[in-house]
Image (cartoon, rainbow, N blue to C red; front, side):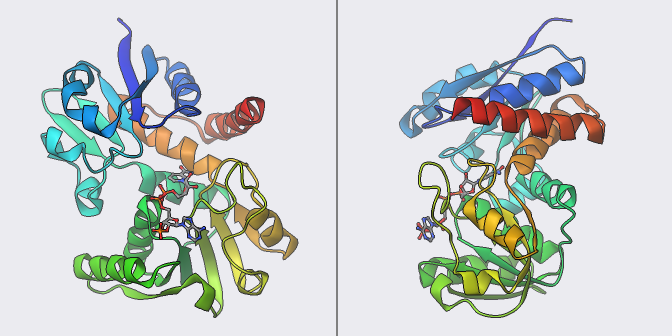
Length: 277
Ligand code: NAP
């Protein structure tokens, strides 16, 4: 079997963990794949499509998750709903998928965190879109908290238009109050190198039963540490990063992995990240 070519595209994309994770997933599935990193600036995307079309598949990160869409022939159901693509399979047609939702749901399961009840999502950028849509599909009662009221209200309106039975309210982060079954951090607050920051106050956090922080660098943010100190279940973003990569291999090769292998890969990815930083 010849070695097929894959890549991740983004800009900037210096410290990505993707080659480490995907190369291991090819090995675990006994598939031959060569996975590289392509730094493509926004204005270069169109001219680089001939290179991308030669690949068997590729992953997409910021800032191309939306702008790639016009270059594809077809979107799967969730990519179309979200208007966002992070995985492409090149075959007779070029098909776009989003594996972030699968990564998020598996990460919650990995952390033993139920996805129901009152859920607060902090931030309203790309990652928050995944979390809000999934919370709506799961029938959660959603609070969307952001630093600017306009963006949160507009995302809440969009989700309600697409999933009409959604229960959702929006507010400023500083105005957050109430009891929450789950708090999801979808902001970069607490991310390397500004690791001593937290997205919500201690008061808000003390009313959250479970916490998911999308940040994976550091592996344990101050938010996670504080939540654990409160006795809450808390899980960081590394497991989501690995599980969304697993979903890409299911799309490319129908690969099947054991939970033990993926749990080991999450641990090894954490060690690899520590080596890098
Ligand atoms: P994004 O599209 O840039 O959105 C970031 C959001 O955070 C925006 O709503 C932004 O508000 C808000 N924000 C930024 N700084 C803030 C501050 N100081 N206080 C309050 N809100 C602030 O980024 P993203 O792609 O959604 O990523 C968000 C985080 O999730 C990053 O840490 C990223 O690494 C992580 N992530 C992890 C995974 C994973 O697999 N684990 C996947 C995707 C993302 P404005 O809109 O007002 O600017």
